[in-house]
Length: 128
Image (tube, rainbow, N blue to C red; front, side):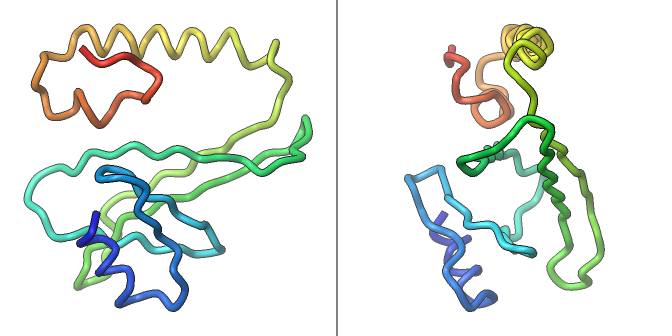
């Protein structure tokens, strides 16, 4: 985390990243926000959580785009977009319960000690 914060301080004027604990950063989003990742070999696993603002209303939608660039060539290495529709609980709950059951199945099938076990599952799933 400290290495990411040091790299961020070199690039951004405002402090947009804050260390919460040894494994967690809090990011204040703007139109464009960079989170520099240190050079590493292999895959880097992570978990993103998004907290929506107070006062959201049914029918609204929030979009978040994430892109990964190489450090030197600024070539796009990967990208995805999340759209978060705001709907009442009865409309959302059945589908989210199904997704949770799939995540729990994946967790049970993932060998203990696997690199993805700790970082790729939501924090509300108990660890083995």
